[in-house]
Amino acid sequence: MTSTFRMVAIDLIERRPQVRESSGLSAEELVALAASIKESGGIHQPLLVRREGERLILLDGERRLRAAKLGGLTEVPVVVTEESLTDAQVTHRQLVLDAQRVGLGPVERAVAVSRLMGEAGWTADQTATKLSVSPASVTRTLALLKLPEPILAHVAAGRITADAAYMLSRIDDPDEQMRTAAQVTEGLLTRDALQRKLRRVRGGKGRPAAGIKSRVTVALGPGRSVTVTGAGLSIETLIEWLEPMLARAKKAKGQGLTLATFVRTLKDQATA
Image 1 (tube, rainbow, N blue to C red):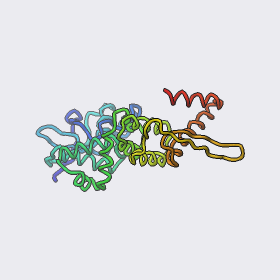
Image 2: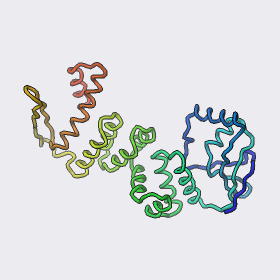
Image 3: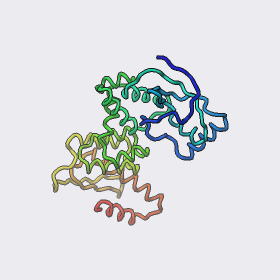
């Protein structure tokens, strides 16, 4: 591969859709980066571009390019690769370069991997080899794209982790999926509790026939007990139901709610 280093006019660099569609920086952080570049006398890490006819297409350095423009720079250092690259090769290179720095968000990475497979015509196994990850990792990454937009928004915002998002993607019932996602974002389900719920739902024990209910009373000590009534009671469902309730109780205590108010709130939420 032949490459050359040079200073070029910033207006000659063309930015096309990147693996990271957002800059990864807030407006304030971008302003701070622009000020830092200006104070230090310019960009010291060259941008990577490829030649396409008379144009220079950005391969890596989108955030530096945006900050340089914001800071009023007219020229930037670039490394120009003369290598002819397909769209798939560009996407692949951007994914590899990004993995060497701050990683993409889960949703950005899922979209990029899917795009790479489509552009290159690769299978999941081939893609895993090219990205130096396991085939299971590619499968889990792509599973996020099965999620509806409201849940993807929570994943992108960091309110749902990639691991939790993968488990949510395995819940087939859309209503159950949304209910579970809400519990995750509210901090009512731990990772272990989410795994238990997934095993129960995937195991066909999700919602038994209406009207088939059981009742269990758990003794907590002299004169203390908790009674639970519901369909399909088991040790798994008992844990699954009580953990969110305890999390809500702790939150209610922090808010200074009385027991009566807390119980009424639970009833209102259950019937909403």
